Length: 132
Image 1 (cartoon, rainbow, N blue to C red):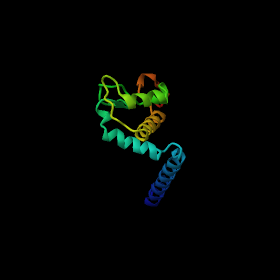
Image 2: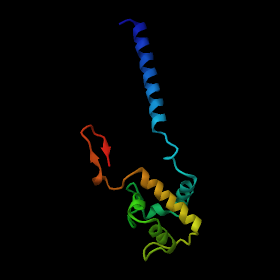
Image 3: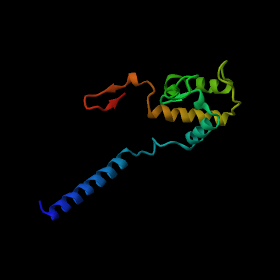
Image 4: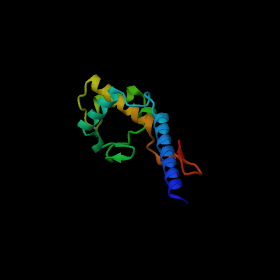
């Protein structure tokens, strides 16, 4: 092969790579799936209160409390708010106001929409990809 053909093939492959990458980026981006401002505040509050020391998100975190990745879809919003307001015999009541509770609930809702905590519930397809 001549050098001109090699350069032409390389440039073609680079064009296809960047074009396809841009297409995938635009295809998967959806403003509805991006975190809301309320969920962002909830994440900051989650970190400030060090909730990850006891609870897990996506299987990462402490082991004293349950994994909260999919708590929003398994418990009602009111149930979550009640736990956040009153605490339990193990979890302290952090004296959160209604706004802070709403922020953490929004954060838990956003997490629930993006992942699954129990890998055993995932189905592995023949091509190696995973689906719920």
